[in-house]
Length: 163
Image (cartoon, rainbow, N blue to C red):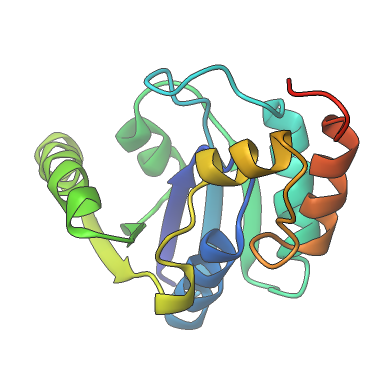
């Protein structure tokens, strides 16, 4: 039984993330979606627990997907989970430059390979940071994120103020 790990900050989860998770779930017996607070990114909008809850809601239709969160090295967590592969979505060449280095380091540290899935074209422009920015200023993100996430974003930002 092959297990894949889909790590990310998911702050918030977008339709692009969901697309990668769904596609990964078609190719692996088990998928662990692992939420981490990325220390290289700015302060997170949602807590780890909130992100885990949103992911559980939007992936509830996928019987072979489990949501978790972790701290520390990804490869240590991957080994703990019995993961055979790490799966990452790529939007653009700029993503590849960074993700290739990470994949090579992870393989060197653990022997676990990384599989890259190209993002579906309709989601190639999406990033959590862009979605947060649009939502912060009252923009419509309903076509960019699952409905439950759009509702949480609307609840987080008062459209009458520029946070």
